Amino acid sequence: MRMPNHNIPERIGSAQHYEVLISKQEQICHRLELLADQLPDRIDTLAATTLADALYPTLRTCQDLEEAYVFPIILKWDRTLGPTVARLRAEHVEDEEHASVVAEAVTHFARSPRHADAERLGYLIRGLFQPLMRHSAFDRDIILPLYCRAGEPYS
Ligand SMILES: [Fe+2]
Image (cartoon, rainbow, N blue to C red):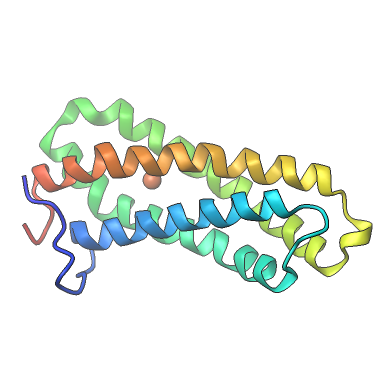
């Protein structure tokens, strides 16, 4: 099994490219956790706004790559992965919807912290990053090696 080579620039759809996008998802999770820990009084409003802006596009970029390259290739390689891929797709939809709600709530909080409900925001943020962290770990530990084994386009 070939794993991503970190010494060459990633090509679109390569395992290395996929790993970079998983890493970006993981970084988003860590930034969300930090933000939740800083509520209500220690929030860096600029960092919060930047995170809110990056949230949805970061998720979509990784999910789009999975839809365009990863899922079709691993499903062609092993049809029994159908239920697993269906579960991951369902998680993507949930995460996307949740990400939009969180992004809006974070932006609102950053604009007027005194008028926002910090407890609700903390609950919303943790409700996103905990399942997203589990999803990203599954992408990294299970789907990425499968993608390498199934013959990612540059293997
Ligand atoms: Fe995913």
